[in-house]
Image 1: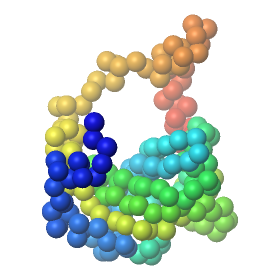
Image 2: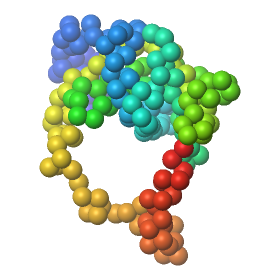
Image 3: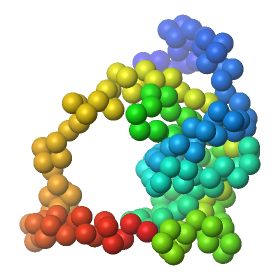
Image 4: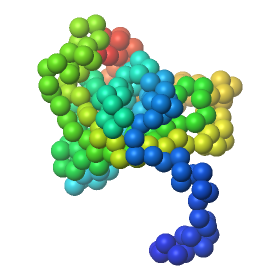
Length: 201
């Protein structure tokens, strides 16, 4: 087992200069374009009860670049666990991973979060008259793009590699195995699509 930085560096060596130079402490024009094209971001946080990694998605540009040092992310209706928000209350450090469909490169942002319920800010993120519960403001510490190797290796955007949903346990089946045989998985799955449609915002 490797337990020291010296042991790690003996295997990996030093990063290429370009890999270091692409990290900057603000959102420049190119990084802004990637953020505004992304309909999906993963939010990572840490708190007293552990780590959380939460998917967030909406129309491209739903994460707003307020200025080169500040992002705004609306918190839409979800499962109400609010694990990420609880963590941010305990400690503001967070990380974001932006993914763009069909694009190999991803974008990583490290920063600190603040949770706002300011009415004017909530109003600005309304969709069909429905407001987010809160808006997460991110004070940017570091931004850098990630090369495409992971997405190329995974063939993530190759339709021929897409998994048939029916080959995996359904949401209802997962609930039934956790909650017991009395859980009505059939009804849950039958109503799932409509439930998602009517509670999306």
